[in-house]
Image (cartoon, rainbow, N blue to C red; front, top):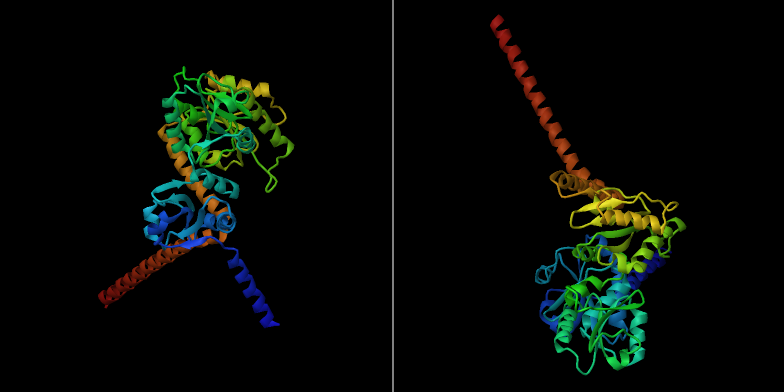
Length: 425
């Protein structure tokens, strides 16, 4: 009986290891990284987020290491606490860190840690920077697959200068979105054309073209258009939105685990913000950015304030101020939300926050309190040990010091009494 139980446990351990198909790499990887395309996760054994990401990483490894993806990407992982040369070579500063490595070409992943997003990152990073569309079916496939992509349409007298600039930008941003190229014959009737050379973005199931007559450069226009009109905001793309230097309208919602659905009250908030983001492009596109967050962790951190779910908030990254709408799921309408946004743009609604010293000090202490709250809520036992052990040692030291002082004082008192007795005699 006992022997069969041991055999069962051993079998489970072997089975668990069998599912690990990613390569465990060491510092020799620095030399042989030029032999192939690599997708590598740098981790630390004590890192909670690394353990959480491991099953997803093994799924990614199954896609590329076991299945014939046709991409030629190998998936590995490196223990950065042991393989310190590799960690230094690739400038690893946090865990887990995911990088696409092909020779001297190194790209760091900053998206969501989901299987689909990581695999999509690998496809983009593998290149080419600009993919050619030669059939209408390929264009339709791109429209069906991607929320956002760019396409340059060229004709007989196309501008070589604009095409070169488009290629250079694609080389820089190839891991964030797809860049395509096609000719005017294929694009005619499918992509709106402007002259001999047209650069267009596909988003919200529509095409929008770059206007060379405006003051915006092609690079600035692509940077502004490379995200969906109403994206899910994560730690990575939030800073991309901040870089646009426009107030960000955020729907703070909560999706149900595994189902990615919302209850009716939360969905109402989501729908109204999305309607304005996608339906009022001409009015707000140059003035505001839009997005939604799943949960309030990001906005709590940015605002240093607890934001209830659901809510509509606006963050101005230039002034570092924020605005919280008083609307509730029962009272919100598209018209009332537009009035709130118009008031912010007109300077009629006053926000909180700012750049003052008091505000910076408040954010500092809030971040410390939030850190300890998160630490105790996620790992209460380990947190209690980490904090309780030094406090316990400090308490023992203080008690011993106090006890020694009392003992010394008592000995001094006894010495004084002996002296008095000697004098009396």
